[in-house]
Structure formats: structure tokens, C-alpha cells
Length: 370
Image 1 (spheres, rainbow, N blue to C red):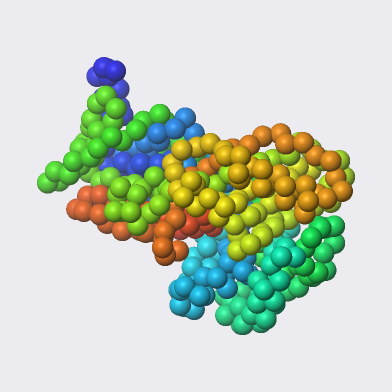
Image 2: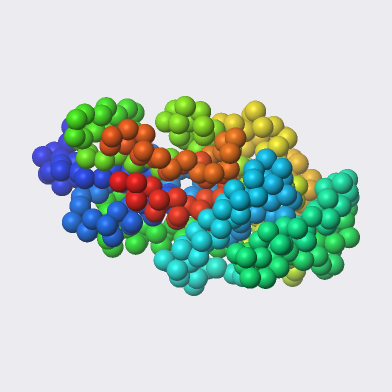
């Protein structure tokens, strides 16, 4: 494609900051740069027609970790690291809500629950035993107990007697959140170009040449906010992790409200109005799900349907309306990678499946590196 002089002049000349990725991280980075450098020229490049990874494909959980996930993290991370992670997730959720407004993102403070299946009695007992300790660890941050046990009032089947409830968790409308962020970016004169793939970049003395499919341009600083697609940038410190999801058709008189976790966050479901969205089961096929290909597989979709039928809606007929997947960025450590890669190149990636919670904060930190 041969660009006109107008296109080159208006979009690709004298670019101060180029951000790759128009998801939660990329747009928060752009908005933060706009606060810091009001007169700068900024370009956001997105390879998809919509934000491609997980920002418009996630389940819309405003959460910071289920009890079994936090207990699991305490086995592999120090107490201080775990508290810092949860603090960052909690602060990020507050920042997102403050920036866009609860009504706009349809934030609903229904609380979150963890369910334990009957065949996980060891995990259940371990969780109940360690809940007082986890509450002690988190009390300075929340000024209250975060987790408490409750009787199951939802009619689940094949589950342990008690659920663990967290009143601080909520749910949002992912599509409305991203539309609001895109509007905010447009209102602050941030140019977003979709269907643009960065094929390479070359650092020069005082700028970076960015190669797209059929032309190149120069920018003073280049920021990558590509999360699950960032493995080449970080020498493998970030690995893609596909998450598969399904959603039901409307279910009359659905009595399930809230966000729900099973098995250390590997399964998760929620209501969207009177539908159930259910995702996860990546742990059935870690190798197959370490991919950047969007798509679904029978092994995972069948397991989601089975649990939906046998555990979550055991007495209710339902039909599946739609299935999809998104790409998360995972790694050996849970801490996001926010770093300067070279003189003029930076990245904010590896959100560990917690993009809604920490995307806004990671975006700000990325912008503040510049």
C-alpha cells in the first residue's frame, strides 16, 4: 500500500510515542503519557480489528485472587510478594473504576465465591485451615476479613458443604469498559490504528524505526503492551496462555449472581444478566493452550459443558449461545514485566490472567518509565 503525503504527514511524521497494543495496558499507558506530555504526538498500533489478546475477550471479573489461588501463590512466592501483588490488583481495580465510572463499566458488587468439588476434599480442608492466616495477611490492606465461609444457597451439586465468600469482588462489562477507554483515548487526541502488525523495529541513536507490513516510520519512543504476544521481546519470560470460554442462552429465573472460582482459579463462571459465562480448564492441556492461536478445542469445551451440566446447573436445561477464546500472558513469576528493553524501547507485559485488575496500573508504570 502506497501512502499519500497527507497520510504520512498526519499520522506517521514527528511521532513522539508509539504504543503497540490497544488493550487495557496500552490505552492506560497512552492516557498517562498524555497527562505527562500534553503536546506530544502519539500513535497506538493494534494488529486486530479490536484489541486482540484478552482485553475484549476476558470474563469481566473484578477480582484479585481466590483463596485457593492465594494459598497456592504463598507456596511459590514470599508473603510480601503475594501481598504486593494483591495490593497492586486492588489498586488497579480502583483506578479503572475511578477513571471510567462504575455505571459506564456496569460494575456490580455481587461479591465472589470459591466452590470446592467433592473430589477435592484435601484442597477444601487446606483452604478452611488456612483462611484465618490469609485474612490476617490481608487485613492491613482491606481493614476487614476478606474471606468467610457460607452455606451453598445456589443449588450446586457434587460440591463441598461450604462456599468461601469474598465481599470485595465484583463483575464488569468488558465490552463497555473497552469502548469507554477507546472513547477516552480519542477525546485526548490519541491516534489508534487497527489492523497494523509490527513486523520489526530497529533502534537508532535518537529514535526507533518501526516496520509495519508494507511501510515503516520513525518514533522517539516505542512501548510494547502486547501481554501474551510478548514472548520474543522478553526472551521467553512471558508465555501465551489461551483461555476458552462459553456463554449460555438466557435461562429463565436464574438465581446465580456473582463471580465464582473453582480449583485455584483454573475454572471460573459468573452470571451476565440471566446467562452463565463459564471459562477455564486450561490445566487439562497446558501444552496445547500455550498458543497465540484463537480457537476452541473439544477437550476443554466438553469439560466446561460437563461441569455446567453436572455441578452448576444440575436441575436446569440450558443451551450454549456462543464460544470464544482469548490470549493471556503467563510466566514462572506472577509479577508483571514492566521494564526498559533498550534506550528507546519499553514493555509492560505478563499480566498473569489478571488484566482487568492490574492492566491500568501496569499501563501507568509503563508510561512512567519513559
